[in-house]
Length: 190
Image (cartoon, rainbow, N blue to C red; front, top):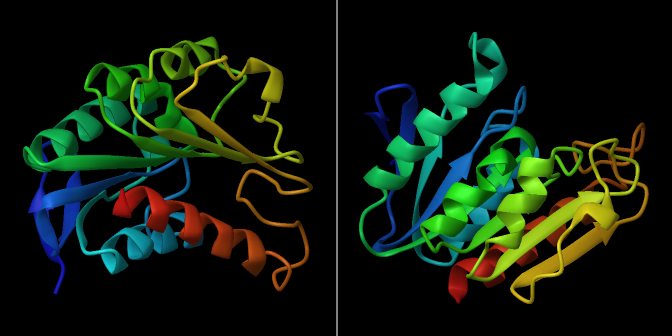
């Protein structure tokens, strides 16, 4: 049974699993961890035996969304423990790619804000396996902004928007959701 915890700047939800492996799930600006892509990403990690810690809330509800996201992420990463931590973040959370890289953690970045120079700079500093996944119909996706870094695996999904969906076609949007699950499951099992 998941346990609600206090992370200081945010509430969190801890899902039991191997205490030496934890997936930390970070929300997007207005995309909570309970929305489909992040919900199933967490489920994929837990299905591989990992514990998971999701940051609850939406950064966009706070006066300084980036500062809130940064503080909540730092608290969640500290609470994740000293074992292997996999970071899974969406959109605004990708502004923290540099901090995650400095912590020497693997990551799955979903719909990264590649229009922001800080995201590209952070991805360039990654030293652990890192997946960058986005859709070509997403205004934030800029494949040419992804740095040349051998630890990056880039997955570009034709026609998908910022929610990793085909606009107006929920049934077709299930295939990309399955792809997210496969990628996270693989990263969580490494």
